[in-house]
Image (cartoon, rainbow, N blue to C red; front, side, top):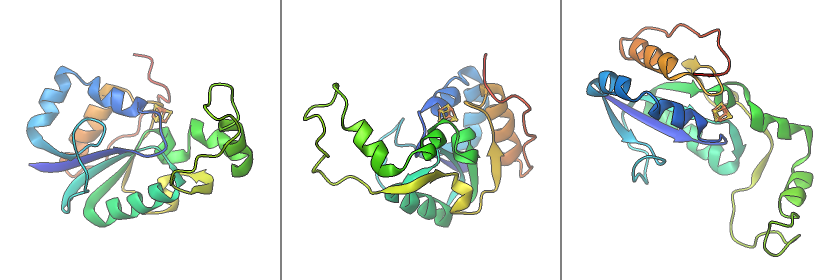
Length: 177
Ligand code: SF4
């Protein structure tokens, strides 16, 4: 049985939702996989060793993401850029039009923020200068494109990867199902 991990870095969780939207198709795929790490859907603190396939949603936007993607690569046979943000930067990549100090000022200076204008004193991971796709940090074996990828495409891609085959890339860039 293949051990599978799934994680969200700088993404919106939409790719995870699309994975869960597999619904009954998940039952066709699940007998062949054991989900061993998935912080959004199960309690998971440490990334275990010996993962067969790791689906990574989102790009790299801070030092913690950088650390995680390197650890994921070390512990996984196959790393998949899951969705457009992980593969190319996607919508969060639009923030690359601004420098990070400007961004932080904007984010912590809104009327909806307690202590308007004050930077948080808690330890938060340091932002990287720009958001980058995960392939800028580690070798990526496969890409499942889409924002988010369609559930059908996820199922087909996972089935191919689990058989040791390269998934066929979808021409669809937005899932409207
Ligand atoms: Fe969200 Fe789209 Fe990025 Fe997936 S690819 S995390 S759906 S913005």
